[in-house]
Amino acid sequence: MSTPARTTSPPLAGGAADPPRLGRLTLLTVCACVLVAQSMVAAINLLIPQLSSSSLHPSSTQVMWTVDAYVIAFAGLLIPAGAAADRYGRKGALLSGLALFAAGAATSALATAPGVLIAGRAVCGTGAALITPATMSILVHLAGGPARRARAMTAWTLAMGVGGAFGNLTGGLAGQFLSWRALFWGMVPLAALLAVAVARAVPRTPRADRGNPDPLGTLLVTTALVAILFGIIEGPTYGWGSARILVAFALGALLAAAFTTHALRSAAPLFDPRVFRSPRLRAAALGTAVAFFGLFALFFVNSQYLQDIKGYGPALTGFAIMPVTVGMALAPKIVGRWQATPRPVVTAGLALIGAGLLGASTAGPHTPYGVYVLWLLVISFGTGACMPALTIGVLTSLPAHQAGLGSGLGTASRELGAALGVAVTGTVLASAGRDFSSGMSSALAVVGTVTLLAVVPVALGYRGRA
Image: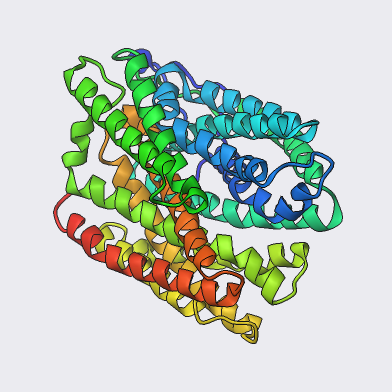
C-alpha cells in the first residue's frame, strides 16, 4: 500500500491536488477503532458474576441492562450515525465517537449505583455507533480502486470479528486478575490514544452535502430499531408471547412502516427504502445478520461451557476463544481470488458457519479442547470467507457519498443478528433448566440449522447481477 496519508487532505475542488490515499497507518488506526468498539459488546459477559456480587448490589434486571444498554444504543443509532458522518464529516464523527466512548467508560468505572453504570454503558454504545460506520466510510473513500477497496473491507471485517474475541480476552483477564472497573478504566486511555492517532493519521474526506438531516426520519428509524432490539433481547426473560414483548415488536413494525411512508414522500429522506428492491442488498443484509447470528450464539455459550463445564478460569477462557481469529485472518487470503464472483464465497462461508455450529453442538464435558477448537476454526474460517463479500455487497448497493449510511445498514444487520443469536440461544438454554451441556447442544444445533437454511435465500439473492 501507499505511505501513510497526511493528517489533513489537500483541497479537492477543481482538481488542484490529488485526493489523499489509504496508507498503512490510516488502515491500522481505523481498524483499531472498530475493533475496540466491537470488543465492548462481548467483554462484559465474563464479568457478570463479579458485577452481581459487587458493592453496587445490582438486581438481576440491572445486570441484564448493564449488558444490553451498550448493544441497544450501539445498534439503534448506527443508521442515523452513518448518515450524519456522511453529511457532517467522517473524521469528526470518528473523533466525537471516541470522546463519547471514553466518557461512557469513565462514567461506568466511577459508577456508585447500577443506574450510573447502565447510563455509562449507553453512552459508550452511542460512541461506538459513531465510530463504526465512520471508519468504513473513511476506508471506502480513501481505498481507491475495487481491488484496494476489497482489501480494506477485508481488514475492516477482520477487525469486527476479532473484536468479539478480543472482548472475551480482556473481560476474562479483568475478571480473574483485576476488577470490572479496571476494564472500563482501561478503555479511557485507549480511546484517547486512538483519538490522537486518528487526528494525525486519518485525512478528512469530502462530505455528502445534499439533502437535509431528516430529523423525523432519524427519530422513526432509531426508535423502530430500539423497539425491535428490546423485543429480541428481552424475549427470553419475559417470554416471547408476553404482552411487553409483543408490544415492542408491534411498535417496531409500526415505526418502520411510518419511516417507509415518510421516506417515500420526503424530498430528502435519511435513506431511500427503495434500495431494498435490490436482491443483492437483501441477500447481503440477510447473510450478514445470519453470520453474526451464528458467531454470537457461539460467543454466548463458549464462556459458560469452558468455565462451568470444562472448569477453565476467566482468563484461560478468554485465551481459549482466540483461535477464532486464525480462520478469520486466513480465509480472506485464500478466497480472495474469487472476490469478483462473490456468490460461491458467500454461500460456502455461511455453510461452513452452520456446519461448524452443528459440530460444536456435539461438545460435552469429556470433549477434548483440541476437538472443540477444530469446530471453532471451521466457524471462523466460514466467517472470514463470507464477511468481506457481504460487507461489499451492502456498500455497493448505495452510492459512494453514502458509504457511512451503507456501513450503518450493514452493521445494524450484524448487531440485530448478534442480538437474535444470543436471544435464541438463551431461550433454548432456559428451556433445558440446569442441564447446561444438553441445552448448549440443542441451542447450537438450532442456530446451526437456521444458518444452513439461510444459505438458500442468500444464494438466490446473489444469483443476479449486482
